[in-house]
Amino acid sequence: MAQIKPKIPKLDLRKQYKEFYLPSAKEVVLVDVPEFLFIVFDGTIQAGVRPGDSEAFREAMAAMYGVSYSLKFMSKLRPEDPIDFTVMAVEGLWSTESGAKFDFDWREPSLYTLLMMQPDHITRAMFDQAVADARAKRAPTRTWIESVSSVGMRAHRSKSCTSALTPMSPQLWTRWRRSPRSTAMSSTVVITRST
Image (cartoon, helix red, strand yellow):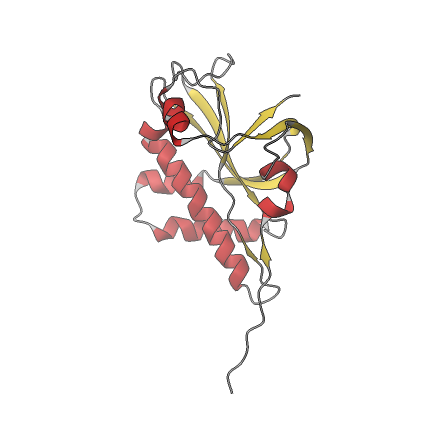
């Protein structure tokens, strides 16, 4: 007789925290964002180079997703209390080396912190194993090993933020990508620190 596997619960943090990740399209709301657990990557992009043209930034993004998907499957396949979860999108905090107001003109080196929210049940041991798994999944180039090894895990709190849904048409998105002076941060959601 075939053994019936119990249904594994699925956690979707976007739905659980709708006020932060699925804001209203009708109004801008001030929200107090509590501390969450994130995997993080701190990096720098050279002056005059856009993120899409930076090999190091592309490797950082790949490392973030590699570690996050390793955590997802590790959580889903663990023998006790398995939990499946939706991998969150990468969020980014941007600044400049000089401390001047960040603008998308890329004239000076850009400092960034990439963040991907993780469920609370993710432990340091799980994270360390996920980094090792992600490191082993691709050809061991120096850039890949450095990128995956640079992924960290820490709690982060954004404090008070404004939250608004800002859908962009394909035409507006194309213009934004070409505009060196754009202040939009995302194609769907803009979250701006207010304090």
